[in-house]
Image (cartoon, rainbow, N blue to C red):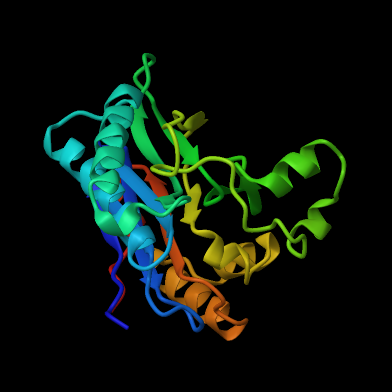
Length: 264
């Protein structure tokens, strides 16, 4: 496994971000169809699906177009959706992605300055990869899954505990590239000191409960050691799917003592 390091970015005199990302094929898949982009101010995970190399092409095309959007110097919901339309065109241009159902989830956050001169995260989501927020020693799911089982939970037909074993547990209702593009859902989250954002594919949440994720975040202050520990646990618990995640930390204050050291 390549070395994982924590990266930092000083946003302003009062705000710094630290983050680390990791991806792994898992123990049962022949290839890794996940991809991620962790580049200030955008952090996303894409979980590809489709036969042969289709899912890998779909996820990589999506993060490549979003990376190009950052190169152009613009980030907004309109810019993101334009990049996703370009990704869909690219996905459909490959012979390997002609199978019905080929596409990718996309979830993550970007940092945005508010009109009140503060800062907030904007989460975006298509599919069943997730964004979580750890705040005040609690873990909250920010995004809502676009999946058949989530619709069944919302309608009261099954319980959250029944979702993992449901025969349609892997069926999602939205994806980038699988059909006509539906814009992501967006949720705004204000920043607080020591907040942590976790962005992950379902390869993590299949193997770790929300409490398990919270446990490893409590145990590991550094983002790089946190993602490595969660990956190890996901693999130990079966590693049934590709596993990808990003952990972000908010650090407020001017004191140099708040700096997060890079993992060695």
